[in-house]
Image (cartoon, rainbow, N blue to C red; front, side, top):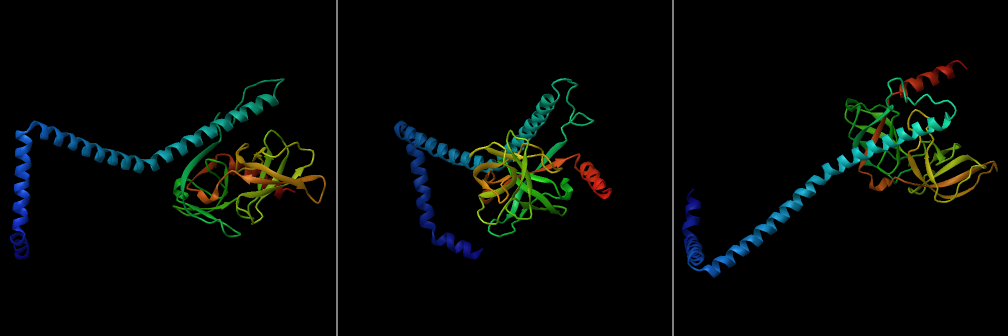
Length: 284
């Protein structure tokens, strides 16, 4: 307390100067219309500038919430698109006898999703992995498919209560059944451990018609991904050692080096499908 008093006494002439300046400005403001208008206009400019900075800062802080809302909305629209595509495929397949389309016994499209943030990601190793901040408590289980707003990301490998580890396309352990959009023939897509922008689609029958720039999508021949999710585009192709098949170089749609958010796909019929397939294999 004594030091504070000593500081105030030592600087008393500065405080007196500031007080006199404030009184002078107040007198000028009250007794001179021109100066009053100048001060008022300057105050409005400063206030507006501060309000603009404050609004920009608040908008920046809200971008994260807005981005999540857009991500969820995009996911919902994508599922609706896939649902409509399934209905269209069913109608085309049943042109003679139409009985309507029912995705399952409840009449609901059997897919949903959970939005998650990427908390760890690697792209420079031969075997890369991605960690996200959603786990068992959010309904996440192993073997669930994972996509971004651009395309396929990978598959859930390991799950804890609050986190999940994903095997991405940039991992040779992960193979994905894909097809050229508009075709029914499928091949197996995998990464060769070289360029993070490309993967190889092998075992595609030679009579399949395609060209560079065509879209590669999931085939739907698994319990992980619905049919029709974008994987990438055809960048190049060549014949395999067996002349009956093509090997396609696919430019991946997902930018793994800039991956911030993902959507984890829930297939409500996945357990049933896997169970009946395993039972069939045991009966061989």
